[in-house]
Length: 327
Image (cartoon, rainbow, N blue to C red; front, side):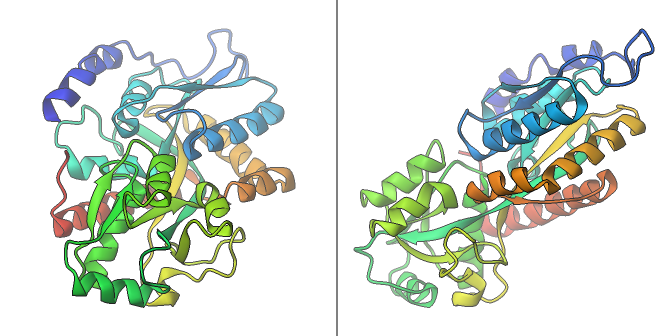
């Protein structure tokens, strides 16, 4: 993996060298005077992409300029992050990052950018919980019963996730640590794949996205044991949180937010933050996010920066305790 990452990011230094110091359009007009590019490091249709497109459309309506979503997939979002970190700090290139952006630094030592140094926080946009699922053949109906079964048969059960260092991988490892279990992890290419693998019985359990899981839960093809966050989901309100259901204090959520290249003028960052927060509080966008199992968030750039620092520190600790390694 280190060699692959080195190759993937080989052009980063060149991109950084080309960075412009312009903070606004050369004509002196008020920002924004042209379309804004919002880069997403994940495939179309996933939570990061959906979040970017919903917020991008709302921003377009608010600012009178197109917000163009561009998918640059690969390396759990690191390719997109590196590209934006090396872009001109003029406010016209942004990146929608996931919680993986604060997990990867704990797993890889050769990332050619620093999320705190080379990218500027603009706004947290949404948070999203996962749901702990089991195949109906697994003889458990509660979190406590799953813990008991896993302890009785260490290493015999497995859980799926959407890639090393993904939010649901971290949820599974946090569960193992807190519950003192040994449920083996099985990586898949995306959130839909690990849910489908549980439906077919290839794996016993998984941490699925709410939107990808609800139909299978309602059809009886999957059994929901608990929500990974601190609040129940409006999509399946009868399902308690994992903390309520047998593992007090458990809290593991995915999140998505917008960053800009370091050096973007503070007034542009503040303007973007205000428009993102306003959009996220609008009734139509709130409803659109909620239908996707996403919970709108509101933080200032400074608060989002503190949030990122706390997430990096938390993930470094979890990776070390779980002895996680890139594969």
